[in-house]
Image (cartoon, rainbow, N blue to C red; front, side, top):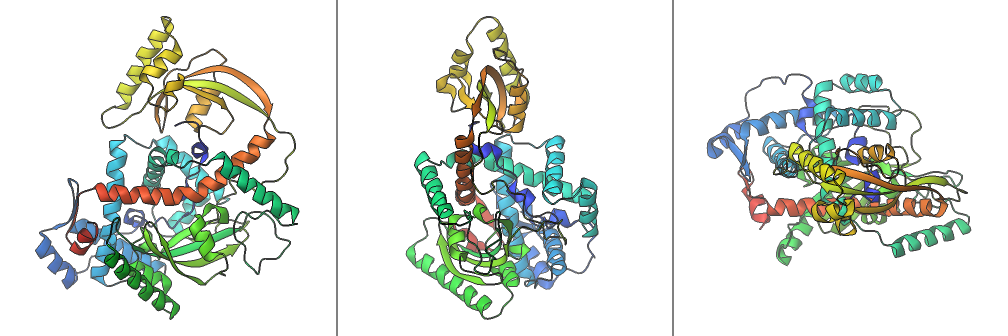
Length: 500
């Protein structure tokens, strides 16, 4: 699906952790780890698993790989001054993260999703821009934190790939209805009529009334995951576990340390930190749960389709206007959606276009997809109609309409598509164009200039609602993906049973 607000979505997972990209131990390979004797627990583990820590579908994760990642995770936790779990617990947490990353990698491979050097370099420029740094200054800050630039780029490359995977697999499933947009705009208009600053997310009771602009919210979480289809007895058992963890952190235990040792979230080994975002970018469930909390306060237990969450508010207030001040503490991303206010006339040039999409995958290589489109271009040159070929060959949802995408506003499609489309005159057809969705041939039908004031408001509202829903949708999809995979976790056999 090309025509959707998700085409504009920024790389959330890339932009939030500017330097603290510790979701993978690879990002920490700046300095050689000091070689020490393996703990007895590791030596014992090596004996009973014969060097295999887990099997994910047909891919083996070795105990040596786990121990290497565990050492790097330990260094990162110590660097962040987070209590390090026992070695056996650390191994299990690291392995759970590696299993999920392997599942995601395999799915990206299956869909033929790859990241070019140009895409990775653009991501670097975006991270630097969002944090008001030059690329050179960003590199200095990264290396100052003890991470090599090559390691940082390798992890960034992986983050971009996972973002493209989310776009391909999940974004089009999040549908925002016109009725929901109408209700959102009506609610905001009522707030503005009452003299309020059109809040897009909960604000601290202590926030000065004169503050304006989007509020930011930084959160950390402890997640107790509940397997899909778990019996009620198991659900109650996991709720009691969550209640025990809540009692510990409310009793003074270090939240980050408890998260590192006990959370089922992928960010567990980063102390459970989820990042700092505009308040309206968080899921509705998280906004409601933290609405009345100040920085440093902890929520009660929140239940979602993924399990039981405990949230801690790390930051609340206005965005920091200066650059990021410390490694791992990124400034909130620049506003993607300012408060919706009266803008006045907005004259915009729109393009009416259609396309044929051939999706690349493990079966359909880039070369093969491009060749198919070149053959279709020859048929177009010989007089066949674009819309007829689109109906027969396009793999986009617009295929039944002859590939017609309707009137497109700047920014409504992904950059590679828009750039190729803008280079065409009405009636012209592009050569094959690659985007993260696959390979396209584009035809521009006509152009017009239109006042988009009302459409712009609706686009902003749609974007805000989308941001709130995409993360839960992505988590649900990952949970389903994990449930479909064959996983033999030999360090934590209990987790295998929990999945059934």
